[in-house]
Image 1: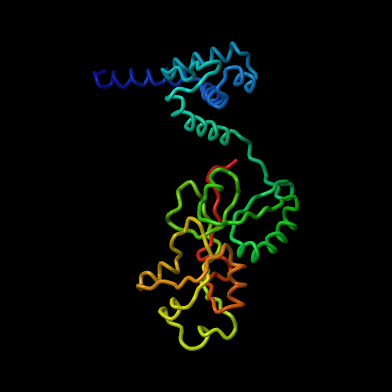
Image 2: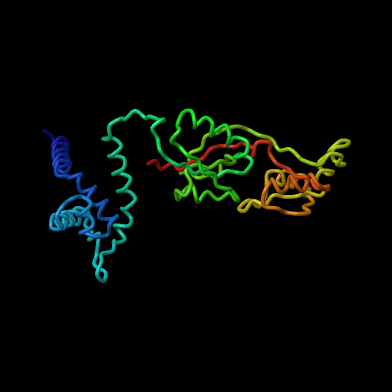
Length: 278
């Protein structure tokens, strides 16, 4: 056997020994320890004695070459290495549990849960009744809670405050959000009966010069409409700003103001939810 072949055999033996000696249960132990920040608390969750958990922590310290949890006053705090490992370990344990979890047939009719949906008022008004009727037939145990959407910030979706969010699908959204396209919509200008904009040809300049009521959306400095006008060197004549489309429509009906909105809510409307699954 030549030198190169011997090196491969020796390396193969070392790897086999390393894999055989690896105790994957330590990953679960480490996950719970980093969540609890306490040997006693972790032991209780895993139904182990405090001494057994202490021995497991000692093995983890040897395996990682780091103390992981260090004394600070009366408690334990994670080391920088432990903080760096925490999310990775949690993901590995989640993945392992999903692999070993038996496949269950999902019974929609048996689900008992309230889902929180963050959407524009136009979306809730247009699709809410039909959605509720469909749920009543297929999943009577499900309840919906609609939350008003005043801005483009998806933090409530990321932190789990809401389960689903509707909004304009764009390339600017992060990879942690999973999106499903629902429909494409168009913008329409709404004015009262007899408004001068309803007579004659409506060009961009004439439209921009009219008095507008603007619906305020925090986190959205430039609407798609304003961006299109800006490209033409035009700017809308905003006479008043309000907080919702219902108010804007009411003002336009009783004045010479114009309001722009989508018939069904928003252009390129889609459903968003966080990638993390329970």
